[in-house]
Amino acid sequence: MNAATIAPAASRELVLTRILNAPREKLFKCWTRPELLTQWFAPLPWTTPRAEMDVRPGGASTIVMRSPDGQEFPNSGVYLEVVPNERLVFTDAYTRAWVPSEKPFMTVELTFEDAAAGKTKYTARVRHWTVADREAHEKIGFHEGWGICAQQLEALAAKI
Amino acid sequence: MNAATIAPAASRELVLTRILNAPREKLFKCWTRPELLTQWFAPLPWTTPRAEMDVRPGGASTIVMRSPDGQEFPNSGVYLEVVPNERLVFTDAYTRAWVPSEKPFMTVELTFEDAAAGKTKYTARVRHWTVADREAHEKIGFHEGWGICAQQLEALAAKI
Image (tube, rainbow over all chains, first blue to last red; front, side):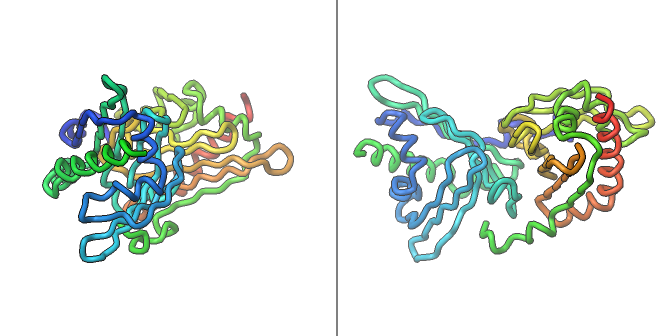
């Protein structure tokens, strides 16, 4: 468990940064209200039929994604940090406070920062426990998938 | 990641319960102040030469244990929940907020409840990500080790 022996954090991390054309309050709302999240969360043609979210440190979430052929995939997680309109951190390492999940795969740190002209610098920093998991996540299309979702998020935030 | 496929929480959990002859405020102090924790934390003849602890949700801790032959073992973790004199939850799944550790092994949930005559019902609920890790922890002497530590904790709390 010596910190020096761990693979460097950077090699286990994936980062997406975008300047989104919406104020951070609206983007944060889209991330934290189920009735909004279900409208943008899955990269189309995937959809998000249901979401239950208890947005507070230690609160649980279950977000159900549906594939184009109708299969449903529930994803459970727990919020670790909630700073309204600024920061949202959650992980799939727990299904609820503090019950370990089947497989701790990732921890997501979202930051929302003011940019010029009512825009927001949106950063999703996704940390994995292993280099192999980071590689697998990259390979199944992290950058493309999260990129599409960021566009869907931006589009919804712009109209609420 | 379907919750239904996970091994039941109970099969991944180890629990130690003791009635300790000290009020919960003092036991909590012994768990959260480095200068006290170093006096009882490791089961003798192991010792705890150093501890750094930032006791708040998201705060990190590094506790160094020393074996009888002088080898040092640093253990890093992060606090998930801190309710003074009642509850303390921490995990080795992170080395600091929110950097995944080499190996998420356990999450510890401590509860301190009033018992009769100034005593405390002390419960340490230790949850693992896998059944194999729970078994390994049991085999290396969880019940004996945590039992000895509970006695050392009680002895220190009684004299502060």
